[in-house]
Image (cartoon, rainbow, N blue to C red):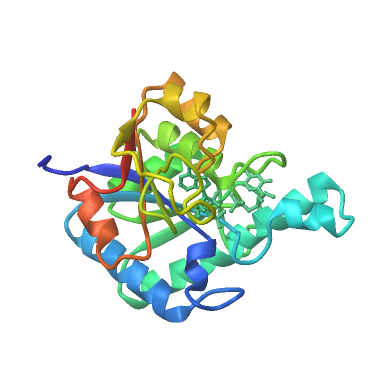
Length: 236
Ligand SMILES: Nc1ncnc2c1ncn2[C@@H]1O[C@H](COP(=O)(O)OP(=O)(O)OP(=O)(O)O)[C@@H](O)[C@H]1O
Ligand SMILES: O=c1ccn([C@@H]2O[C@H](COP(=O)(O)O)[C@@H](O)[C@H]2O)c(=O)[nH]1
């Protein structure tokens, strides 16, 4: 077993924050996640977090309602800001020092994203939450996670989601799909495995940044994966 990571980029699924609800944030799920991040922060781990927005709004659902693509994507990015502020609040209730840095300027509620500030916050032991994705339409929060991970010098992208790894097919649709323990970036792209978008995988591939896809719904998995336990699927 490895001794664990020192600086990580944790990508939290927005959809997983719903728990059993059909929309929004289940406070118990949020509280559990915040507790795990608190534990890691107390161990001296440096943690950057990107949260998805699927529990509120995705660009693609806006398009289906007749909203133009760029506007729908900005709405999606705003939904990640809602999640970021909720996580910040949960963490601060537990005494964890945090900063939200937003890729879209909204100075009344978050710092603007400045790479060097993000790194400084991490060095000071603050948990940094990156809000508003990349700040650009036509992207996803998976790509934002890969981008921010590289910018802050994270050792790994930890994609915490609703499935326990990468499967040969979508396990929510195909019960015969089988799980991979390890894959290369090329295999994920060639097999068109949809768990993470191709832009994010390509970015990680070009910069040799490992990705671990693991189950966020399982208690203590965030702590276990950051401490080096082999969970889910490793892509490198
Ligand atoms: N080959 C595959 N292996 C594993 N999961 C897959 C695969 N293909 C599709 N999926 C689906 O991908 C989903 C995870 O990716 P998705 O981008 O939807 O969620 P997320 O990024 O975790 O959530 P959000 O966008 O809300 O932040 C899983 O819930 C699973 O149903
Ligand atoms: O860089 C980005 C990140 C996100 N979006 C939009 O936000 C929603 C929610 O993000 P998920 O990654 O799907 O959770 C996404 O559907 C996009 O519409 C974006 O445009 N740019």
